[in-house]
Amino acid sequence: MKAPSSLEQLIQALKVLPGVGPKSASRMAYHLLQRDQGGAANLAHAIEYAIATLKHCRRCNTFTEGELCEICADEDRNHQQLCVVEMPTDLLMIEQTLAYHGLYFVLMGRLSPLDGIGPNEIALARLLERAVDGEVQEVVIATNFTVEGEATAHYLAELMRTRGLQVSRIARGLPVGGELEHVDPGTLAQALVERRKL
Image 1 (spheres, rainbow, N blue to C red):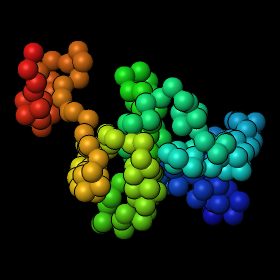
Image 2: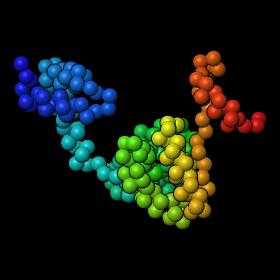
Image 3: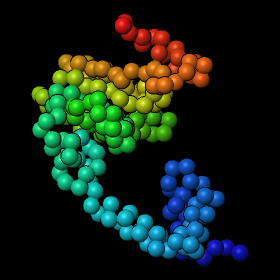
Image 4: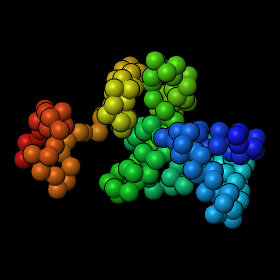
């Protein structure tokens, strides 16, 4: 027996979420319809509202409800530093550290030629325009330490250096409170390479 078309449509819609396969999507759909119809209605409303309300900040490309996000509108931030991250969630993580007081640019992705993601798909033109605005002096590259993130960092570093900007990359190393015996060899090797004098 086939599921009703409206149920199948809901399952297909849930499958667009990262990490959600057919079985998980099916379980979610049945849960929402059978046990939490109020939650399902709230979810649908929240998604519609977010789509209708959110847009990209005209300076940093993160999501915002206004022309500028709170960070870009904050005059107390260091306007000479521009931290480049892959996603808005990365921006939020850096903000939680309270260690960085500059501005940001969110790529909304990373270079991945095998997936068809090139410079045009990650707002590179907007980043270059932002980086050479006359205020920015240092570009801090904070892409992830994946193959794609490293390739993106290298590509961005070359572009920024040719435009006379100082470029830095966030460091890799051991987690705070971590023990050496539990660290993977790649992280330990990078920590040794990036060691600093005390």
